[in-house]
Length: 200
Ligand SMILES: Nc1nc2c(ncn2[C@@H]2O[C@H](COP(=O)(O)OP(=O)(O)O)[C@@H](O)[C@H]2O)c(=O)[nH]1
Ligand SMILES: Nc1ncnc2c1ncn2[C@@H]1O[C@H](COP(=O)(O)OP(=O)(O)O)[C@@H](O)[C@H]1O
Image 1 (cartoon, rainbow, N blue to C red):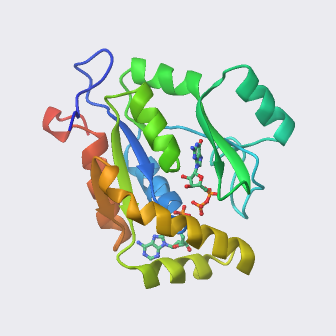
Image 2: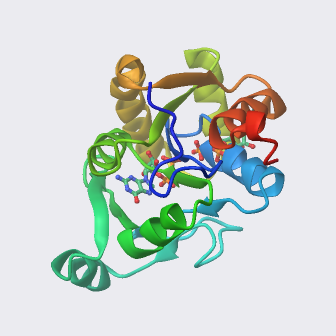
């Protein structure tokens, strides 16, 4: 696994790409990492999905119309993008802010689906891909139902995607199990920041 500092080496920050099934706790882990790693650059994806209660435009996602998303794709402003959950929504990673952050040596966190993780690894080979896994399938179902933000139909589509995603975890550089949130968050802090350099 290449966990080097990336462009402009000598920096402690790394590019971590986080993927995992719906409701495994990616947003919760991202929230924890944003608190724990002060100079972290979190890549704010553009998405055509509607905001969930509590989600803030420009912080969690940039919420855009399908027409605005088309424009981002046409003007080549996205590092990668994907159709998510069988066409329920499109989401993509704006290229310019990620490249600026990697050039300045800040730790970078990008949360994308599996196709996005593969595309980013290709564009930025120094990136470390991490799969966030649930302790077991029942826990994943309970978290999705417990969040209570999706209809039964949308939950079923997310669980269908989840089965495929769980089967692909071996393709990642690292797997972190989200049992206890604080433990998973700490494991990711170590992957994002080279603690040996005393940078935290
Ligand atoms: N390829 C790609 N996937 C993204 C991007 N932003 C979010 N995703 C993925 O889209 C999927 C759906 O995310 P979301 O609707 O926020 O809810 P979730 O399914 O409950 O995690 C997740 O797998 C995210 O990792 C992006 O910019 N590019
Ligand atoms: N480690 C954990 N232990 C218990 N519940 C968790 C944990 N991580 C997340 N959750 C809960 O699971 C649900 C889904 O988490 P969320 O962060 O929205 O997932 P994702 O972003 O992967 O879809 C939320 O209700 C959240 O509070």
